[in-house]
Length: 157
Image 1 (tube, rainbow, N blue to C red):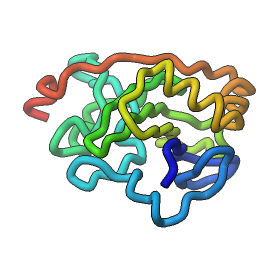
Image 2 (cartoon, rainbow, N blue to C red):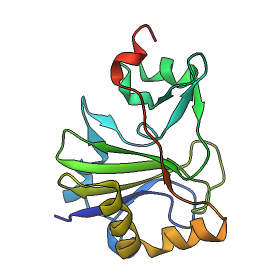
Image 3 (spheres, rainbow, N blue to C red):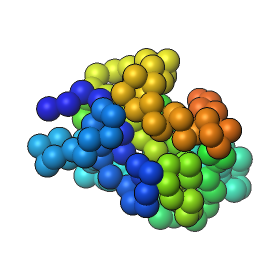
Image 4 (cartoon, helix red, strand yellow):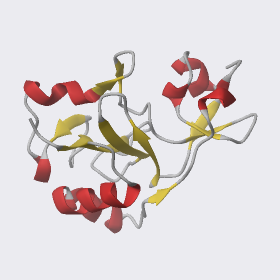
C-alpha cells in the first residue's frame, strides 16, 4: 500500500487516483477515496463560501451534502482546506481547472497516511506530484490555505 496519493485530473478529463509521479493506483489502495460514512472525496473537501453567512465551508461537513452545495459556491482555484480524515489520512483539497479539465467542479486532492501539517502536505505534493504544481504555475494559480468554520455552523442547512 502506498503512503501518498493524488486524486484529480492528470492532463486529461476525469478524476482518478494516482500514486507518485502519476502512476494509476490499483484496487488495493482505492479505499483512500472514501472516508466518513463512505463518502467519496471528489469535491467534498474543497472550500466553498456559504452564500448567506459568508463562512468557509465544505460540502461533507453537513449531513445533507447536496443542500450545503446549493447554499454555497466554490472558492477560487488554489485555495485549499486541510482535513484529518477518520481513515488515518490527511487530505488537502482545492478547486482546480489547470490539470487538463476546465469544466466546473474540477478539484485536486493530495492524501497522505498519518496526521500531517499543511507544510508537510505541500512538500509531499512537490516531491511526488511535480506535474500538478507545474500545471498550477503555468496558470498562475498559487496554493493558499484557508480555514473553515466548525461543523456546528451548518446547523439548519
